[in-house]
Image (cartoon, rainbow, N blue to C red):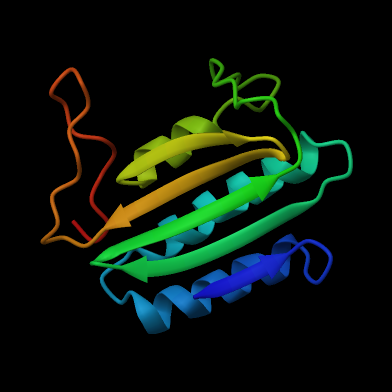
Length: 139
């Protein structure tokens, strides 16, 4: 397990620690994809919260790599249409595409965005419409 808090690290340190953890604990995972998603989620926590506080927890269990990024904002992520001219609006879509599953958990102190990557021999859960959620890491 890897735990990092904004009081002890910045975004660059979170990316570096994430890369090292994935390399050691999840050789089947696409390290670049995981680091990019963590960068997007932590970056959003910094940008869209009053104090910019965040908490990252990475863990692997039962062939699933889970990343929880907790922040102090109760506002749920609002995916928007990407704007190539002005920039922005791509982060949530990128995170959805690079994970097996992406969810938001509300709690009294803010929210947690949970990203999951399933090992290639682990089928991702289906959505209610029957389609698969995201892409498998390593496939």
